[in-house]
Every structure is written in structure tokens, then in C-alpha cells.
Length: 411
Length: 178
Image: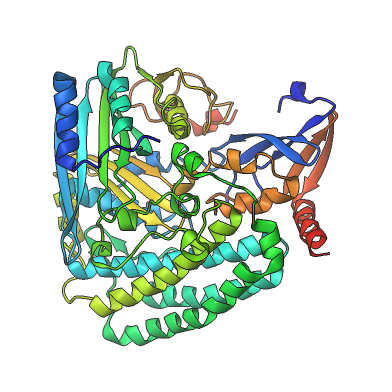
């Protein structure tokens, strides 16, 4: 940290690499004037594990399991985007049934992720009862994930050219039962987040991202949509079975008739997307065609086929946080891909933090940072440098500041 | 934001080949169908000459404000290939085209102009390419490292496959700790 820029009026606080509102490490340096944020500077790479490098010694099927471990919450979208890229490079046609099953798994992951986010967001503003309530609902969705794939987190369901496990007719009642439970509880969650006075006070006109900034800074996912950018890979392009389904962009004006691009709008978009996901799963169950679930069930044959491929492809999927894109180049000589580039949605959603945080208060940092649902982790210490002296502020204190602000507003 | 007429995939390709002729080295259109209805997603793979790069980007921005997904890169031996993955015509149901613009940079002088003046959001991707592939981005607003730690040695680029690659570090991990 450069101490040279510290003046009598301005001071800096470094936040991170580990931070209460972030699930993975990132480093922020805030320049402050009193309580107000003047400038933000950031550094990434604290969890750069060289995964793309590790792929050079693995064959495409092994990479599926490596990709799954990029992130715990997005353990479906990374392997699936990798599969899409390989299928595009090798011209593999995925069976229709598998396309529908892929949508079902993708949407279940979105429901899990959005409800998890809702809980975290409530926690950040000191509304812990809602955290427990929403995570209780999420638990049911995780149970469904376990029922369908055998695992709660790393699902191991993806295969190049299809999926690994089928959904048989006897499994459908359990899915419908969970969907009914979600629908019954959706109204409760909606009422808490959208009608509660305190939530409104903390989230309205807070962390605004304008449409122009969202476009220029390449924001993706719910963050871009809540600023009014109509961009959703599921709607924009045809992949999996999304081309067959009835789906539209979710922007906050659907509900409120206006787009402000603040934290409240991001809550609206994510909540409506939970409902949309439930609807998409129901559509898939209705239309689910019969047939095989994978293009080539024999893995050695698939690998031999992929080894001969000389080509490149990109795979894009709308992950819960936005577009995930993988680029794969196969050289036709080696079993391992020549190169593999992973781009997770948060990579694009980092730069929009700067305009969103400028002008906000320290107590708003947790909720604004959390409002993009960043895929990075938790801090336990924040150091404050004021007039050249170092103070330390731990996770609990920063969290307390946020709660105190909520209390102040409630009085 | 400039919003032009929405062009089809073929029209986009024609627009660039008419405008830049020999500067477009190779163009491929790939269409992938999905689902029961077999709706199509088009991909354009366009290899361009480095000299026309900035001009092509400028023309692209007059078509439709694109989204830059990421820049990926390959070390191909004598050259470094950068691929800019853009998506354009988003915002309408199944109307999007993915435009992959690839440009080869000679290893002796791996330089390319920044596109941050058109799209500030390209900064993270450009900084990543600088430190991982050792390309020089001319005019980049922020030259600092983004992902690599400060103590990582200079002149080592993790995605290179030649003597500047990370092999030395990774074979001697115990030494790197010293």
C-alpha cells in the first residue's frame, strides 16, 4: 500500500484479499473521505491455481472433473461450458433428451445459487433470520440435486456429448414435489425482500450501475440485466433446449416499471429468475423427449474420436452470475487440449464494482459487493490506515458497522 | 452507444470482407443447432491481419455495441495468437452472433493496440494477456499486474511454450520457495 497518498482528509482502507462479503479472495484498496468512498483500486489472483495449466496433462474427460472444481457453487456451469466448447470443436451432436436434462440441471443450480445469494445479502445487512429462512429453502433444492445426481455440490453429471445420469419417470414426482415447495415459499421470500421497509432503505439508490457503464464495462448476468441491458445467453442464442422453451429477459421494469440499476433492482432480477427457473424446469418435464442421454457412451471411443480432432470451439452458458465462456483448442495430435481458457462471469463483473462503490459509505461495502454475487471468498481482517497509523478492523466489526446502519435507518 | 441496423451473420461477414478485403485472412461461419426445433447459433471465426486490427474493431463498434466475452491466447511457436471473443446483436430472442476475431503477433515483436478506448471493460482481459502471454498492449491505461503476484519473476509468462514459459518454476517448486 502506498502511504504517500494519505492526506489529512483522505485515508485508505485495504479490504481483502479475504473479505466478509466475498466468497473468494480479492483485494480492494479504498480511498476514503470520512465515511465516503472516493476511489477504489483492486487486485486479483489470490486463488489463481493454474487450472488451465493443469489441463495440459489431462484428457478432455478428466478436465470435466477439474472444471467442476473451479468453483463450488458453479460446479455445473464450468464443465458444461467446457463440454459445449469441445462439442463445437469436434462437431458432436448432443441427443435431444440430454439437451433437456442439461437445462433441468442448469436451472436447479441457478435456484440454489440465487437463494444462497439472497441469504448472504440478508446477512450483510444484519437480517439473519432471513438468512436461515432462505437457506432452509435452499436445503430442499440441494436435496433434489443429491437425489438427481448423487451429490450435493460437485455433481459429476456432465459428459461430453450428453449427461451421465437419466431422469426416470419414477423420479419426476420428487422433482414436482420440490418445485411445489419452492413455489409455496417463493411468496414468503418475495414479500420479505421486496416489501420490507428496512431492506428497501438499505438497497434502494445504493450501488448504482448505469446502463451505459454496464455496457462499457462488459457486465454480465443479473448485474447487467438489473441495469437494463438485455443480455442472457439462454435467450440470445440457442443451446441446450433453451431454443425450444418459452423464456424472456428478466429486467426490473417487469415488476416496477422502472430501471434504477441499484441493489434493490438486483434483488428483483434474482428473485424473478428463481421463478423463471422453476417454470423452465416444468416446461422441460412436460416436453422431455425420449431417447439416449449421451452421444457416445463408450469413453475410450469418445477419447479416441476427440484425439483426432483438429479445431477450436467456444462454449457459452448462462451461469447464475452471468455468461460463462470456455475456449478450447484441440490439435489432433495430443489427447490433452492444446489450450483451454476459462472465463467466469465475475471476471467481467469486477470492473463495474468501481462505479458502484464510488460515493458509497464504508457500511455499504458488504451489501454492494455482495449484490454482484461475486464468485470469490471471505475475509477475516480489514486494516485501516488513518494518518499513517494502522488500525485493524476484523470481519465482525465491519459486519457490525453494516448492522448499525440498518438499525439507524429503522429508528 | 451506436446502434446500427441489425445485420445477419452472412451480412456481417460480407461487411468486413468488402471493407478490408485481403486484410481478412480467413473467415469461417460455423452453425450449431440445438434442441428439438434445431434452432441455430452462428459463430464467425475471422482471422485478420494485425495491421488492420484497430480499424476492424472501429468498424465493429459501428455495427452494434458488442460485448467482449474474453480475449484468449495461444502460443503457436513463431507467433502468438490472440482471439477476441465478441458477441453482437444480443438483446433479441436467438439473434446473437458470436464473432471470434483472431490476430497473429510475431514473437519477435508481440505488440497490439489496446481496445480500452472503445470498451473500457477490456482492461482486465488485456492486463491478463500482458502478464500471461508476454504481449505488449500499446496504450493500455493500466499496466500493472492483475493476477500474478508481485514477487513472480519478470520475463516468465505462464502460457508461453518456449524458454520464457513457466517450466523452470514448476519443475523446481522447492527452489521457487527459497
